[in-house]
Image (cartoon, rainbow, N blue to C red; front, top):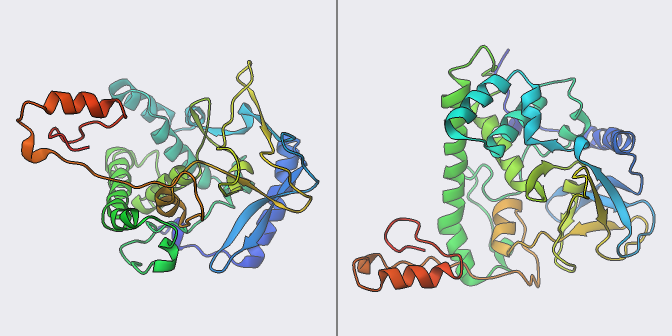
Length: 321
Protein backbone atom coordinates (compact mmCIF):
# COMPACT_ATOMS: atom_id res chain seq x y z
CA UNK A 1 0.00 0.00 0.00
CA UNK A 2 1.37 3.41 -0.97
CA UNK A 3 1.36 6.44 1.27
CA UNK A 4 -2.00 8.22 1.38
CA UNK A 5 -2.17 11.94 2.24
CA UNK A 6 -5.71 13.19 2.80
CA UNK A 7 -5.14 16.80 1.78
CA UNK A 8 -3.66 15.72 -1.56
CA UNK A 9 -6.95 14.09 -2.55
CA UNK A 10 -9.23 16.12 -4.82
CA UNK A 11 -13.01 15.57 -4.83
CA UNK A 12 -14.91 16.64 -7.94
CA UNK A 13 -18.08 18.80 -7.57
CA UNK A 14 -20.19 15.91 -8.88
CA UNK A 15 -18.71 13.48 -6.37
CA UNK A 16 -19.17 16.00 -3.56
CA UNK A 17 -22.83 16.49 -4.48
CA UNK A 18 -23.34 12.73 -4.44
CA UNK A 19 -21.72 12.51 -1.01
CA UNK A 20 -24.04 15.26 0.23
CA UNK A 21 -27.10 13.27 -0.85
CA UNK A 22 -25.76 10.17 0.88
CA UNK A 23 -25.01 12.15 4.04
CA UNK A 24 -28.47 13.76 4.21
CA UNK A 25 -30.18 10.37 3.84
CA UNK A 26 -27.86 8.82 6.44
CA UNK A 27 -28.31 11.70 8.87
CA UNK A 28 -32.10 11.53 8.79
CA UNK A 29 -32.08 7.77 9.32
CA UNK A 30 -29.28 7.95 11.92
CA UNK A 31 -30.81 10.71 14.04
CA UNK A 32 -34.46 11.08 13.05
CA UNK A 33 -33.89 14.80 12.34
CA UNK A 34 -35.65 16.00 9.18
CA UNK A 35 -36.00 19.79 9.50
CA UNK A 36 -32.61 20.68 7.98
CA UNK A 37 -30.21 19.38 5.37
CA UNK A 38 -26.67 20.07 4.18
CA UNK A 39 -26.26 21.79 0.81
CA UNK A 40 -23.49 23.41 -1.17
CA UNK A 41 -23.22 27.18 -0.97
CA UNK A 42 -20.82 29.28 -3.04
CA UNK A 43 -19.15 32.61 -2.46
CA UNK A 44 -16.59 34.47 -4.54
CA UNK A 45 -13.70 32.11 -3.79
CA UNK A 46 -14.92 28.97 -2.07
CA UNK A 47 -17.57 26.31 -2.33
CA UNK A 48 -18.67 25.45 1.18
CA UNK A 49 -21.21 23.18 2.79
CA UNK A 50 -23.96 24.96 4.69
CA UNK A 51 -27.03 23.92 6.67
CA UNK A 52 -30.41 24.90 5.23
CA UNK A 53 -33.90 24.80 6.70
CA UNK A 54 -36.28 22.47 4.88
CA UNK A 55 -39.21 24.27 6.50
CA UNK A 56 -39.77 27.67 8.10
CA UNK A 57 -38.35 27.96 11.63
CA UNK A 58 -39.33 30.50 14.24
CA UNK A 59 -36.89 31.70 16.87
CA UNK A 60 -36.42 29.01 19.56
CA UNK A 61 -37.89 26.26 17.39
CA UNK A 62 -35.98 23.00 17.91
CA UNK A 63 -34.44 21.95 14.61
CA UNK A 64 -31.90 19.37 15.84
CA UNK A 65 -32.20 16.82 18.62
CA UNK A 66 -28.73 15.59 19.51
CA UNK A 67 -28.22 12.20 21.09
CA UNK A 68 -24.88 11.81 22.86
CA UNK A 69 -24.60 8.22 21.62
CA UNK A 70 -24.70 9.50 18.02
CA UNK A 71 -21.89 12.04 18.32
CA UNK A 72 -18.17 11.47 17.78
CA UNK A 73 -16.39 11.74 21.13
CA UNK A 74 -13.06 10.93 22.71
CA UNK A 75 -14.18 7.79 24.58
CA UNK A 76 -14.93 5.94 21.33
CA UNK A 77 -11.19 5.28 21.02
CA UNK A 78 -11.61 2.58 23.68
CA UNK A 79 -13.67 0.51 21.22
CA UNK A 80 -10.75 0.25 18.78
CA UNK A 81 -7.53 -1.75 18.58
CA UNK A 82 -5.68 1.45 19.60
CA UNK A 83 -7.23 1.31 23.09
CA UNK A 84 -4.38 -0.54 24.88
CA UNK A 85 -1.82 2.04 23.68
CA UNK A 86 -4.04 4.92 24.76
CA UNK A 87 -4.63 3.39 28.18
CA UNK A 88 -0.89 2.89 28.70
CA UNK A 89 -0.34 6.50 27.71
CA UNK A 90 -2.98 7.66 30.17
CA UNK A 91 -1.33 5.76 33.03
CA UNK A 92 1.74 7.95 32.56
CA UNK A 93 0.37 11.27 31.34
CA UNK A 94 -3.33 11.24 32.24
CA UNK A 95 -6.45 11.49 30.15
CA UNK A 96 -6.26 13.66 27.00
CA UNK A 97 -9.48 13.93 24.98
CA UNK A 98 -7.68 15.73 22.13
CA UNK A 99 -5.22 12.88 21.54
CA UNK A 100 -8.03 10.34 21.75
CA UNK A 101 -10.06 12.19 19.13
CA UNK A 102 -7.10 12.65 16.77
CA UNK A 103 -6.46 8.92 16.68
CA UNK A 104 -10.13 7.94 16.61
CA UNK A 105 -10.74 10.30 13.69
CA UNK A 106 -7.90 8.79 11.65
CA UNK A 107 -8.91 5.28 12.67
CA UNK A 108 -12.38 5.88 11.27
CA UNK A 109 -11.08 7.68 8.17
CA UNK A 110 -9.06 4.57 7.35
CA UNK A 111 -12.06 2.28 7.92
CA UNK A 112 -14.18 1.92 4.78
CA UNK A 113 -16.94 0.36 6.92
CA UNK A 114 -17.01 3.13 9.54
CA UNK A 115 -20.46 3.94 10.91
CA UNK A 116 -19.51 7.61 10.41
CA UNK A 117 -18.44 7.29 6.76
CA UNK A 118 -21.20 9.51 5.23
CA UNK A 119 -20.14 12.31 7.59
CA UNK A 120 -16.39 11.72 7.31
CA UNK A 121 -16.62 11.78 3.51
CA UNK A 122 -17.74 15.42 3.72
CA UNK A 123 -14.96 16.65 6.00
CA UNK A 124 -12.72 19.07 4.08
CA UNK A 125 -9.55 17.59 2.66
CA UNK A 126 -8.16 21.07 2.19
CA UNK A 127 -8.82 24.07 4.42
CA UNK A 128 -9.74 27.72 3.91
CA UNK A 129 -7.58 28.56 6.93
CA UNK A 130 -4.55 30.73 6.18
CA UNK A 131 -2.47 28.15 8.09
CA UNK A 132 -3.19 25.35 5.61
CA UNK A 133 -0.23 24.72 3.27
CA UNK A 134 1.30 27.87 4.73
CA UNK A 135 4.92 27.29 3.76
CA UNK A 136 3.97 26.91 0.08
CA UNK A 137 1.12 29.44 -0.07
CA UNK A 138 1.98 32.76 1.53
CA UNK A 139 -0.26 34.71 -0.84
CA UNK A 140 -3.27 35.82 1.22
CA UNK A 141 -4.47 39.24 0.04
CA UNK A 142 -5.28 42.45 1.87
CA UNK A 143 -9.00 42.07 1.11
CA UNK A 144 -9.09 39.01 3.38
CA UNK A 145 -7.93 41.22 6.23
CA UNK A 146 -10.12 44.23 5.44
CA UNK A 147 -12.32 43.81 8.51
CA UNK A 148 -9.54 42.88 10.91
CA UNK A 149 -8.08 45.60 13.17
CA UNK A 150 -4.69 46.93 12.10
CA UNK A 151 -2.85 45.63 15.13
CA UNK A 152 -4.45 42.22 14.69
CA UNK A 153 -3.32 42.13 11.06
CA UNK A 154 0.28 42.65 12.09
CA UNK A 155 -0.01 40.21 14.96
CA UNK A 156 -1.70 37.42 13.04
CA UNK A 157 0.56 37.55 9.99
CA UNK A 158 3.79 37.78 11.96
CA UNK A 159 3.02 35.80 15.08
CA UNK A 160 -0.03 33.58 15.13
CA UNK A 161 0.05 31.95 11.71
CA UNK A 162 3.64 30.81 12.03
CA UNK A 163 3.26 29.82 15.69
CA UNK A 164 0.09 27.84 15.03
CA UNK A 165 1.56 26.12 11.96
CA UNK A 166 4.63 25.12 13.94
CA UNK A 167 2.41 23.89 16.78
CA UNK A 168 0.42 21.69 14.39
CA UNK A 169 3.59 20.22 12.94
CA UNK A 170 5.01 19.61 16.40
CA UNK A 171 1.85 17.83 17.55
CA UNK A 172 1.81 15.64 14.46
CA UNK A 173 5.50 14.84 14.75
CA UNK A 174 5.17 13.97 18.44
CA UNK A 175 2.20 11.70 17.79
CA UNK A 176 4.03 9.95 14.96
CA UNK A 177 7.35 9.39 16.70
CA UNK A 178 5.98 8.63 20.17
CA UNK A 179 3.09 6.34 19.18
CA UNK A 180 2.82 5.44 15.52
CA UNK A 181 6.44 4.75 14.61
CA UNK A 182 6.96 2.45 17.60
CA UNK A 183 3.73 0.48 17.09
CA UNK A 184 3.60 -0.51 13.45
CA UNK A 185 1.70 -3.66 14.41
CA UNK A 186 -1.21 -1.36 15.33
CA UNK A 187 -0.78 1.54 12.90
CA UNK A 188 -0.42 1.49 9.13
CA UNK A 189 2.21 4.20 8.66
CA UNK A 190 1.10 4.73 5.06
CA UNK A 191 -2.04 6.33 6.49
CA UNK A 192 -1.09 7.27 10.07
CA UNK A 193 1.60 9.61 8.74
CA UNK A 194 2.57 13.07 9.94
CA UNK A 195 0.57 14.83 7.22
CA UNK A 196 -2.64 13.04 8.15
CA UNK A 197 -2.03 13.54 11.86
CA UNK A 198 -1.71 17.27 11.18
CA UNK A 199 -4.90 17.13 9.10
CA UNK A 200 -6.75 15.50 12.01
CA UNK A 201 -5.51 18.21 14.39
CA UNK A 202 -6.80 20.91 12.04
CA UNK A 203 -10.17 19.17 11.75
CA UNK A 204 -10.53 19.16 15.53
CA UNK A 205 -9.32 22.75 15.91
CA UNK A 206 -11.83 24.00 13.35
CA UNK A 207 -14.84 21.73 13.90
CA UNK A 208 -15.07 20.54 17.51
CA UNK A 209 -18.19 21.68 19.34
CA UNK A 210 -18.28 21.74 23.14
CA UNK A 211 -21.43 20.64 24.95
CA UNK A 212 -21.21 20.97 28.73
CA UNK A 213 -17.41 21.30 28.40
CA UNK A 214 -17.05 18.00 26.53
CA UNK A 215 -15.64 17.96 22.99
CA UNK A 216 -17.63 16.42 20.14
CA UNK A 217 -17.68 16.25 16.38
CA UNK A 218 -21.36 16.84 15.60
CA UNK A 219 -22.60 15.75 12.17
CA UNK A 220 -24.76 18.43 10.49
CA UNK A 221 -24.33 21.05 13.21
CA UNK A 222 -20.65 21.53 12.40
CA UNK A 223 -21.53 22.28 8.75
CA UNK A 224 -23.20 25.53 9.81
CA UNK A 225 -21.45 28.66 8.59
CA UNK A 226 -20.91 31.69 10.79
CA UNK A 227 -22.35 35.13 11.38
CA UNK A 228 -22.51 37.56 14.30
CA UNK A 229 -26.16 38.65 14.12
CA UNK A 230 -27.37 36.46 16.97
CA UNK A 231 -26.39 35.29 20.43
CA UNK A 232 -23.20 33.28 20.83
CA UNK A 233 -24.02 29.59 20.41
CA UNK A 234 -24.19 27.41 23.51
CA UNK A 235 -25.49 23.86 23.91
CA UNK A 236 -26.28 21.84 27.01
CA UNK A 237 -27.34 18.29 27.70
CA UNK A 238 -30.52 17.54 29.61
CA UNK A 239 -30.51 16.04 33.09
CA UNK A 240 -29.81 12.57 31.69
CA UNK A 241 -26.65 13.96 30.04
CA UNK A 242 -27.70 12.18 26.85
CA UNK A 243 -29.90 14.61 24.87
CA UNK A 244 -29.45 18.19 23.69
CA UNK A 245 -31.94 20.38 21.81
CA UNK A 246 -30.56 22.85 19.27
CA UNK A 247 -32.93 25.78 18.77
CA UNK A 248 -33.11 28.37 16.02
CA UNK A 249 -31.35 31.55 17.13
CA UNK A 250 -33.51 33.64 14.76
CA UNK A 251 -36.42 33.15 12.37
CA UNK A 252 -35.42 31.26 9.22
CA UNK A 253 -37.48 30.81 6.07
CA UNK A 254 -37.66 27.51 4.23
CA UNK A 255 -34.56 27.00 2.05
CA UNK A 256 -32.63 29.71 3.93
CA UNK A 257 -29.24 28.95 5.42
CA UNK A 258 -28.87 28.60 9.20
CA UNK A 259 -25.88 30.36 10.72
CA UNK A 260 -24.11 30.05 14.05
CA UNK A 261 -22.24 32.64 16.12
CA UNK A 262 -19.24 30.98 17.79
CA UNK A 263 -18.04 34.19 19.45
CA UNK A 264 -14.63 34.47 17.77
CA UNK A 265 -12.88 37.71 17.00
CA UNK A 266 -11.86 38.19 13.37
CA UNK A 267 -8.31 37.20 14.14
CA UNK A 268 -9.41 33.70 15.15
CA UNK A 269 -11.97 33.44 12.34
CA UNK A 270 -9.14 34.16 9.92
CA UNK A 271 -6.67 31.84 11.61
CA UNK A 272 -8.98 28.82 11.84
CA UNK A 273 -11.57 29.37 9.12
CA UNK A 274 -10.02 31.72 6.56
CA UNK A 275 -12.76 34.35 6.85
CA UNK A 276 -13.42 37.67 8.53
CA UNK A 277 -16.89 38.96 9.43
CA UNK A 278 -18.04 42.54 9.04
CA UNK A 279 -19.30 44.40 12.11
CA UNK A 280 -18.17 41.64 14.43
CA UNK A 281 -19.02 42.71 18.01
CA UNK A 282 -16.49 40.19 19.36
CA UNK A 283 -13.64 41.77 17.42
CA UNK A 284 -10.76 43.07 19.50
CA UNK A 285 -7.06 43.84 19.44
CA UNK A 286 -4.46 41.25 20.36
CA UNK A 287 -1.58 42.60 22.41
CA UNK A 288 1.55 40.88 23.65
CA UNK A 289 2.82 42.64 26.76
CA UNK A 290 6.26 42.12 28.23
CA UNK A 291 8.10 43.44 31.25
CA UNK A 292 11.06 41.15 30.71
CA UNK A 293 13.59 43.97 31.05
CA UNK A 294 12.25 44.70 34.54
CA UNK A 295 11.71 41.18 35.77
CA UNK A 296 13.65 41.70 38.98
CA UNK A 297 12.03 44.93 40.13
CA UNK A 298 9.89 45.15 43.27
CA UNK A 299 6.60 45.35 41.32
CA UNK A 300 6.78 41.91 39.77
CA UNK A 301 4.39 40.36 42.31
CA UNK A 302 1.99 43.30 42.06
CA UNK A 303 1.93 43.05 38.27
CA UNK A 304 1.18 39.33 38.40
CA UNK A 305 -1.70 39.92 40.82
CA UNK A 306 -3.12 42.75 38.72
CA UNK A 307 -3.06 40.88 35.40
CA UNK A 308 -4.42 37.70 37.00
CA UNK A 309 -7.68 39.58 37.58
CA UNK A 310 -8.08 39.62 33.80
CA UNK A 311 -6.87 36.02 33.29
CA UNK A 312 -3.51 37.19 31.90
CA UNK A 313 -0.63 35.10 33.16
CA UNK A 314 3.14 34.97 32.92
CA UNK A 315 3.91 32.54 30.10
CA UNK A 316 7.72 32.65 30.01
CA UNK A 317 8.78 33.20 33.58
CA UNK A 318 9.66 36.79 32.79
CA UNK A 319 6.36 38.68 33.14
CA UNK A 320 5.45 38.26 29.46
CA UNK A 321 1.67 38.19 29.05
